[in-house]
Image (cartoon, rainbow, N blue to C red; front, side):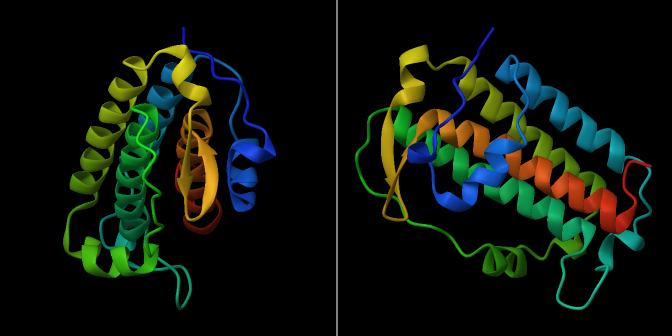
Length: 175
């Protein structure tokens, strides 16, 4: 069982607090695995043409959200690896909108995008399972601010939870 202490405000950037707040207590590997399975189940019967249409001007489509989730998790898992291994090199942010635009996610099938997310999620869980408990308190610098490895795991889960909430609210996913 992998239990990670809930991060304090000093462990992450201010805007990550909303993500951290979305994380339930429990075995972190189980939480991550279940969340990935829930997303896959919720999107399993979503219509392909509808997955390419944003719910409003300037918003992302379902496919773009799922592609973003895979990209963002890759970036955050890389940050986690760097911090967990004691790499003190400061890490920069990334422009999520530019990544979504460059990703051309609407040209791919929703099933392919979900499979890619699931592959990344399994890699994140494998990384988590290979970390020792003292690793979670290690800190690195991201976008000029200190962040702990444990907080990154909370952000990974909470980020996906926030987007699942948006998919349910704006697209009726999972209903």
